[in-house]
Amino acid sequence: MRHAAAATNVEALSAEVAGLIVQALNLEISPAEIEPDQPLYGEGLGLDSIDILEIALVVSKKYGVQLRADSGENTRIFGSLRALVEYIIAHRTK
Amino acid sequence: MSQFLSDARQLVRALPQGTHVLNACSDRYHFTVGLAAALISGRVSLLPSSQAPQLMQQLAAFAPDAICLSDEADDSNALPRVLDLRGALMNAKDAPAGPAAQEVPHIDAVQLAAYVFTSGSTGRPLPHRKSFGPLIGCVREGASRLGLAGVARWAILATVPPQHMYGFESSVLLALAGGHALCAERPFYPADIAAALERLPRPRALVTTPVHLRALLGSGVELPAVDLVLCSTAPLAQQLAVEAERRFDARLLEIYGSTETGQIAIRRPTHTAEWRLWSGVSLELEADGSRARGGHIEQPTLLPDVLEMTGSESFLLHGRVSDLVNIAGKRSSLAYLSYQLNSIPGVEDGAFFHAAESSGSHTGVARVAACVVAPALDAARLLEALRERIDAVFLPRPLLFVARLPRNDTGKLPLTALESLAAQAKSATPA
Image (cartoon, rainbow over all chains, first blue to last red):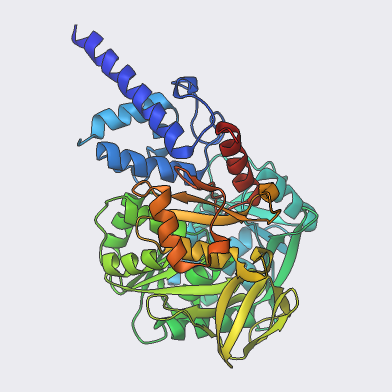
């Protein structure tokens, strides 16, 4: 049961974060079009470093998560929507 | 320092034949070791403005003998000659350092130190020669203007790459010429920048751009006190300058320059709109811009900016020539209008631009458009505030509210991106 609930949370948050990304970056796609495992950076969705900075700002405001590259996890966090959402779940303060 | 000199000399031994070094290192210490090794051995450094494969290949074609210095693990730039700088230094650790290893090298002022590149109109990068003497002369003058010429040893942290002319001068050369400490890393996220600053001894300086400043101030991250904030690459909104000085408890100085001329003027935007020129540099107004010459400038250069000299060494910047706006006999510039837009409380970012199909009005008057990020304002309030600041003929038509402006990596706004924003808005709302 707990697993099912957690999965629903991840799905709901994924949809929410995808919506934030599309809105913040003014992308011409619908949030549902962002594949959970598609790379966000460079190839895939094709975001550049300024976009990533923009997402980091939105995420910090909404979830109280300050993204860090110091940890060496940066490439992984933006490896996909799923990785970003997992990172937010693990570190969110609001 | 002795480690640095010995690393530079070790690297010289590892460099293959050839007179050019394409320095693509992202770590600022590695970059500077590469630069020093090239200087010591009489080689010329090529500074790529990005690591886009196409550019790297163009630079390799410009100097076929160039060896590419890299410190990235997965270097996919596919150049034929790449040297992993970390490996070269690692291998050299066993080799005994010669007795002269610690000697500070003498570099001739006329030695060609580097080529920096601008994007030419043909799409091919245009090389600009940089000799050692003028480079150092320029940053020494800068150091005295910044208050970095005294006995204090500063720690400098930069959010701009060392290959960019501004980053090259204000981080690498400023540290080399003044004996300051350079932070090797280039932190990216606001939290990283704040943490990296916190770790530095004081006095400490942050070398950054309007894009990074905006993110830093907007992130809600607690910012440590610094002793100087330097900003360049794009016009800085007045309220951003004010907030940066308050949050960092520091002076903020803005640099004016170009890849061709290097840095030539400075101001403290919270105190004055007037720029102070580097000594010996002069600006002459011409029909299509302002020509800069003298001082450390090696090649007189036409800057595409409209300036107004207010004294022999001071001027006001009125915007880019291509930014000029003439509506019903009234003149302004997009840069000036954008500046006014950004000075309105509640405006987070904004820009005026020439809309592609701006002659849509019945009178045939070409209007300027603007897009703005201002979630707390509505169109009526924003226009009211604009009306107080600019002539009514310049009020934007259309005025587009957007979530963010399509800025590129250096914070600039490509016209094509603005035009496509306008086109989208047009198709979304019935005429």
